[in-house]
Amino acid sequence: MVIRPRGSWQDTNARRPRSDETRPVERCITIQAWRTGAPVPYLSRFGPSPVGARDFAFTYPLPATVLHICIPVYNEAPTIGVLLWRIRRVFQDFSREYELIVYDDASTDATAETLEPYKQVLPLTVIRGESRVGTATAVDRMLRTVSRRTRYPRRDAVVVMQGDFTDQPEHIPELVRRFEGGADLVIAERVPDDTSPLPKPVRRLQRVAPWVIRPFVSVPGVRDPFRYFRLYRIQLLRDLIRELGDAPLASAEGWAGNVDLLIRTARIARRMETVELAPRYDLRPRESRVRPWSDAMSLYRFGRTARARRAASPPLTADNAS
Image (cartoon, rainbow, N blue to C red):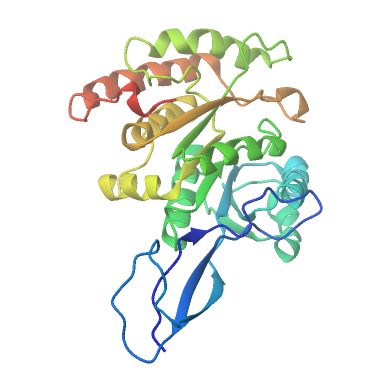
């Protein structure tokens, strides 16, 4: 029997799964083969099968996309358990394979104890820091862990979100749909003229942050570069890690770190998209950790550093923004 490829990639589950389906969507390849007594020349997938050949087909599944949800936490015991369970409910309706990675940044409350039982019922990995390193370093370590772990970096993606209810799990499908449409980088932005209540520190920093950073850096097509809530194709992160080596993926903390990581990834992304998703600051049981004055100064210092660094990097144009 001689086997010749005779067919193209076929998506046997191309339809969108119903809400009652829990299995991940799998792509399959169908191989056509025929039985013949003598070798035949190679035929393209558009050509006829040999005379007297008897066609048959067999199918095997390709691996489904894996979404890695990365959540840095510090003293988030009241919210992290509920957040993980809400993510689970989202993926019951939005059928995709997923993994949860939580970085516990040396929490001093019951965060570690809260996470423990969820490791038995969810696809959850907890990375525990011995000393507090900050959100930027926590995100850096999670992204590097996922980059090493995945077998299919062009197929899989990472979603970074906060663990305090600011970023809503119900918004994850909006990011994923744009990723499945071909985007390497998907950025969640605030809704313009959003009237939902904001903590006073956040409201003050939102007013001054664009003016502080505008003279130094900008990302074409992105109106709000300050949020954590984003999706990255893992191949994009691998390319950035290969370029930076052991250097931090973001060189600043807080909102400045978010801008830094966005600038670095947007520069090498083939395609990026933005989506308007309103954050919910009113659901958090604790006060905001934003410090308007110190965070504004951090943005200013980062802006000056980024402007000096920009001269050594290829310019970013609007060609890959949409």
